[in-house]
Image (cartoon, rainbow, N blue to C red; front, side, top):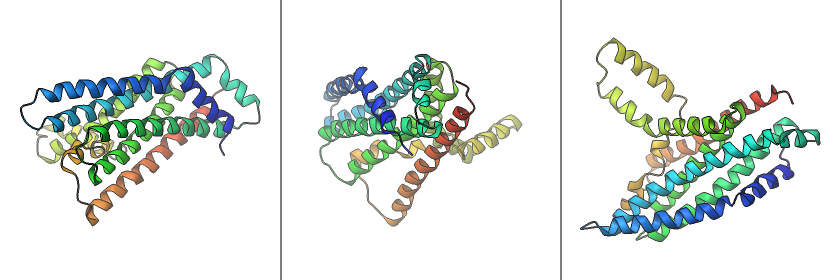
Length: 258
């Protein structure tokens, strides 16, 4: 199902573009700035530094993967690298799934680096840190495959990046939107219509607001049976959403003429 040559191609592209080197430099810079900002707090300086770092690292990883995937996929189209691989005994489904697997490997490596930097700043490594790390890995996988989907169907890498980050922002804010809707802040016909539209959208948008919560790093978490069901839901939505985005990307890719 996977073409090893395509997976190696993605890894070599990341090495050529020095993706991980730049990410490590950015991680170090964010950690240093977070320590500086945390030192200005009167109390709980370590917690403040950890909060600043986790938020900055989380956003940096998402933006970095979106930008790399958008420009790498577009470059493979412009340089006729797609046609070269398809001229070999590689099916179009293999191409899409192999590229997705290669990008997922890069996202996994980046999640490990970010988790290590976050753990370095954590006063104690407990279940909260483990849950934050795993959920951020899930989030990064979702965003990476979403960026691949937009990169396949859109011609402009800039539009791909903006679309991916726009969807990411919506997924991060969807919990707040649902809270406003259920809180009764939808008076009037227009607001009620918008509430119904947003409720429908929430059914197909991953709940990224439930992932990588900073409170887990600061206060930890107690694994109860109810929590286990919720965490299983996070993992299940990753499998479902990644599967849907890859199927949609493959559907569009099958219709392209080379």
